[in-house]
Image (tube, rainbow, N blue to C red; front, side, top):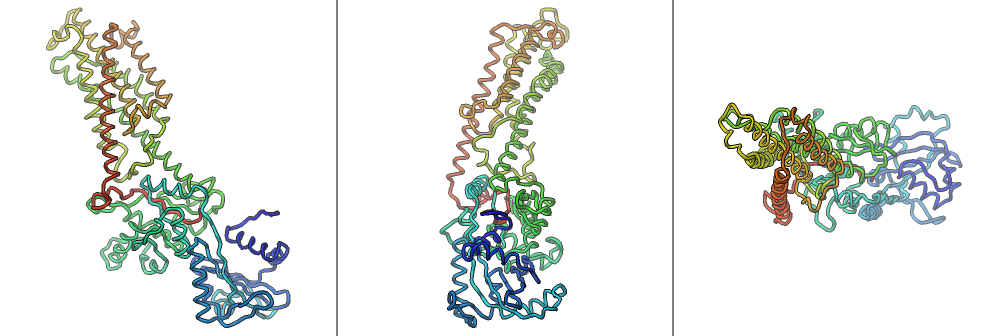
Length: 586
């Protein structure tokens, strides 16, 4: 498109640059402008591309490029020598060994290797190329090709990919590379970006090739559980693959979709061995990636180099084509999920101290919290504080935690309910009753159904203390639930919207207690300075309990990190619950 500017696939751009470096731009342009008489496009099954073009000296020139092992099958001759001394000689087994060794060396250096071959032909000028079938061309045009050489194309990972992969792994996300490249190339790239460990012997099933997948495709559209021999054979293979495989090489489009299906079916397991499947994100940019993108739980298409077909089949489009953006997306998803869970937990905390007074009233205790006071807490304060959690920044250990699998752990789970009802709610209720009974003379009202004017005032003081203590307890809960494990002394109070809501809660509580108009509606009464100060001990008590609990949680997490990495328990703890699957075009 201009000096130093290229448009097209990375492979074609690399070949063009190599041609310009060798022969100059004008000669390469003449070749590119040449008429194409016949073409067999590259596809994932053949792994080669064939082109027939007219030659300047008459006749035609047939050109072939593709995977070296596929190109060599059509080659009967080879170019030997350089410049004017070069000649065509029959291909010998020694030459094949030399070419294979050279290709392997390039692949081990993370090069994408192409084999190049050509031959001269003299097809009649009146030959109708458009009517030539692929089978006829394979039999008559591709035989006796002359092997020219190998191209080692370096397609280095983009900056930040290695760190992004490591971030995924520390977050419990298993990264798998699916590539059409040779296994040696795929392994070299995978080691370079930390998908598989370098300088270690790879265990079985780490690298899977098309040859191994050839007879591992189900006869139907997907895996069956009918107990047939085929189902048992496929399950025995794929249950190992989904656990250990990190690189799939020389795969076809149907293989990509099959890999996703296998991960979704057998990827995750409970402690009892029952599979519940992984949540799979698949990245892709080509037309051939569309079935796998559609099959995945989250299809991610490339926005810059992605085809329209891939974009239509995907759920998310990466505008910058950066794998690191996926990690940022995972992080934001976790923040949103955790903040929603924290918001729900906070909202539920006050429900125990809100409902218990109604039951104790039946036992003869003056009503500690009336309906209008409950509404003042729920609608006047809690609802806004709960919304403010949407702006809660992440905890420092967010991406070091195990992912939450929606089939195994719901947002509102047993842990949330125990925390809200059996822990925080109980502490709030206990503190509310403690300060309720500090009202002078409240003990005399127990068991009575009719009260004097003085006793009515005492009951209002006790009820106001209960209400105010619960407001302070909710403030403590609002701050406590901003983190799962991290200390508030380290995390502090970064959510300014939540801070404003807490200030609003305090002001509203003061209005409800001291405003004469509100006193009549909410059945409250003014408190002394001492009575207003004492309930803040609830905040101190709950905050201290939370700091102790979080310290134990951090200590438990540290113990899990330094525990020996052997045994069933360690393997279960280390097994990721999420899987990201991506081609090698990073």
